[in-house]
Image 1 (cartoon, rainbow, N blue to C red):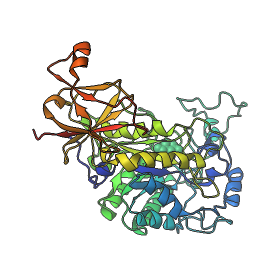
Image 2: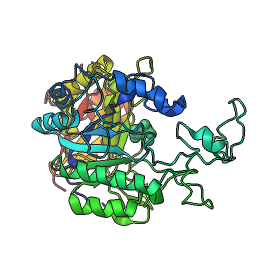
Image 3: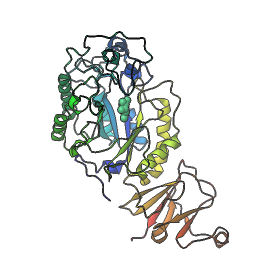
Image 4: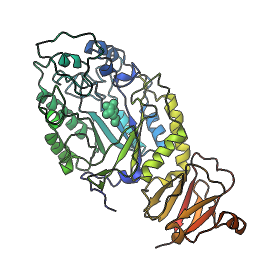
Amino acid sequence: MNIRPTTGDSSWFVHDRFGLFIHWGLYALPARHEWVKSREKMSDEQYDLYFKYFEPDLYDPDQWAQIAYDAGMKYFVITTKHHEGFCLWDSRYTNYKSTQAPHCRRDLLTPMVKAFRDKGLRVGFYHSLIDWHHPDYWIDNRNHPQRDLVAALGKLDPMIGNVENEPKLSRRDSNPNQGRDQSRYARYLHDQVRELLTEFGRIDILWFDFSFPPAPGQDRRDFSIGKGREAWESEKLLAMIRQLQPQVLLDNRLDLPDLESSWDFATPEQAQPLEWVRVNGTRVVWEACQTFSGSWGYHRDEQSWRSTDELIRTLIDCVSKGGNLLLNVGPTGRGEFDARAIERLKGIGEWMKRHSRSIYGCTEAPPEFVCPRDCRLTYNPDRQRVYIHLFAYPYKYLHLEGSFVSRIEYAQFLHDASEIRIGLDSWHADQIGTADQRISLNLPQVKPDVAVPVIEVGLKSS
Ligand code: GLC
């Protein structure tokens, strides 16, 4: 099968399939979305209260790593800095960092990296290109907390039109970006990425977020109406990354779509693709990043949590389409995982304990294995096994078509390795009919007591 090759090392990634995203920053305190500074158009002074009161006294990275490990996750990606600009490590280029927050006073990143590595998980860094705190970062009319200052210059966001429901702003003549030097910000960004790639050992994933270039036809160098590769000096950044850590896997948000080496994997978020993600018609390495409830940061009042069963199905769905799942947790300001997240991760771990064989090392099944109704297939090419995930439990028989008919050698439930007999009783064959190109698996009447039952099919060599 033709899959777009990657510059970084994706061999482990397409095997491991399941990782933990962690969004942790000062926004855990307002606890009403990691975009709160932008959504509520907060000033730096207002937001400073969170810096002042940030006190993660219950932070225990070993426990975090244990929870991820028990859930069956093989890697993690942590927000070293989110859009708010606050850094979780002791960067020498800023004071806006955990070691300077008066009630934190510690490097949060180093012990986290160590804890997850000790558990055998690989390390990924999410790093925000956007920075709503840095004094050289240009205020834009798109998502910056102070966007009204730009809008007041008459530069309205064509998509949103920003100020509709706002009190009328008087037009200003003074440029709010006076004195801000975006290229100095780019240097800061590069310097910090160099720190991250030189002071924490081998990094497996770099996850940049995100570019929002001006609309076609607009001036790409006007950083008050959007930011893309010019604002981040992406090409230079890329060269440094590939030189410092050639194996690192890069996401696709640096706004360099025409440069082959500029990205390794695609990153659909908050929705599942219908099939294997393609770019220009070619299948690519991809990873869906998904939340439990909508927000990435800790959100106290959000009640829209997905169930454990749904999340397990999402993981299966990714692998059945050749992709990975990066499932996100937003720890609290005290430094603990949300109890609702812990409960779900436990449930996923329960399932993974007996079913990870259908996830690790697996991918989309060859199309000649026709996927039965209400199911998802995954396939392990090395072991020559197809895994049938029963999203709905069938009444007595599961009917298989396509290559299953000629290739099936053995079938068993994965959770307890109990044989599933192949074939219809003659009594039933008369009633429900048979077909040459069909084979039926004889299932127990009662659905096994697991979230999603899986049938493992051993194949005769073709
Ligand atoms: C979006 C959001 C952000 C989140 C990210 C994860 O781009 O800006 O808050 O970190 O998605 O994919």
